[in-house]
Image (cartoon, rainbow, N blue to C red; front, side, top):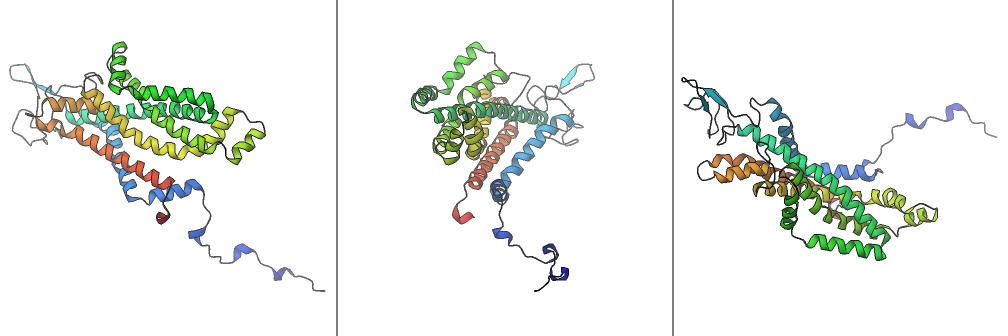
Length: 325
């Protein structure tokens, strides 16, 4: 009988093994990340939003003037001379009393630096949008999952409430809130919370109706898992893809809504600023000082474009077409 010897064997790791990476097994989220990173439009959106967010965070911190500071110098007679409505200029770029100052976006009609105010306004608008969307995601997702999971009379009652809430015009809701709340940050966030959760709840409900009869849900119910354990531990993780996509499309809507509210005068209160309040101030002077409206409206347009490109990228990455794979 043959007696095996140690020299008859060798460790597998010592061999050169070629692995076909094209067909190597990979996780779901890794595949989503790869598909998203290969999408040039999505990456363009990431770069646009990233640049705006970087300026919104850093520019007010390093700017020469604060967003509420009125730039002025002392004249020969001892009186303050305010830098009102100066066009964009570099230091030494204009023959005026402020020729040694730099105003990349110019100054407004009160003498405040529009560079600082634009990026401070972008920061405020982004904070409002992210806070409102995060809370709306919690409310809308929970509401939709509960409605879809229990079904029957519970679903019927909850969906009638959604239909009633969705049928009320947004301006009516804002007008009612404005009666009981002061103008400012709180009113804007409250308006977004009341109106933006409905779309999220419909998507969560539709996904729950599709998933609640799956085998793993039935298995969890058979093993004695509670309803809310199944909703938030079994169903919710499998609905996160469509929810992320909806969030990406909801953020530009929230930013635009904030801009609209500030534009019509029920948003941010001076001297605080946002993209909408800056557009409103620039619109009032558009015939004589058109440069004032260009920076905030450009930032708003870039943010809207960037977040929509990111949303499209997530939608394609989470549900890729056959020809894209």
